[in-house]
Image (tube, rainbow, N blue to C red; front, side):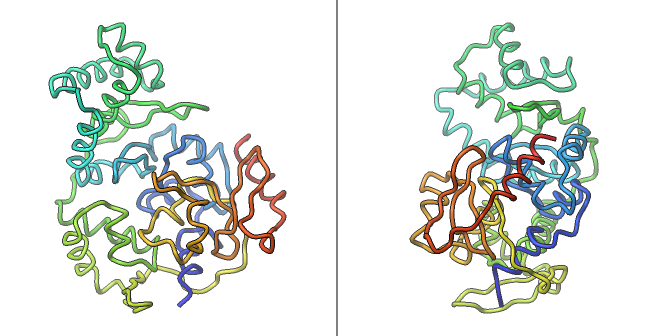
Length: 336
């Protein structure tokens, strides 16, 4: 079993099958979107025909939104999946926000959320900067860090999500104005649905990988895997059990060099990343604080770092490759 090749195929990084951005994001379950600019490339590199205008249209229409979800990190998610996913992670996210927002009282959080809703009720979409300015005009005090925690709490409460796409900074809008209410699955059904989305797009993957990705308990994740066991093939590899979903492609991978964005799912989507990068180079791809850098991938292996405005850094001289055409493709996509 070539784990890297199968992951490249089902993460749509080699021979991508999709032309519709909403379909892609729904397939992936969620896409890490930590950096506001690079999240666009995380989508573009997975499309049959990358198009920034299509990304903007999909984002602006609310078919795909960006918000803090699992692990209390920025994610791109299909609109119809947001509400039930948020319910799975809201309690842990609120706990994290309170921990890092020590000194902010519950009363302060509640008051700030009320004011945020008041401000956004008069606009379809506002930048973070504009919201903070309006909050200050209404008498809400606090430094930039505190204001960020207020906005994160409003997300965790299911009040706000991303608004229209801005060139440089986050935008917000009221969820009820962007995403229609719908019948939602139960907690158990939601975890099962999440497992199905994860394993069809991230296979081969282990229980530990799924626990990492969701930040849910091992017991919940194991039960969900057991519930879809009929859809999964299990294979032992180096003392771990890897699951492959029945919808996954396992053949058709071809040699390819990729310029992956920072925080890409190819690395961050798994607890263990040894299939993609040699241990001695891990700290050049991501650090112990959870910062993931843009990387160059050749045939499934991370071989260096890249940056839009800097010279590439290859981990070993023998792995140097010409990425000029790939950089041109990236810039053409971003500038459209």
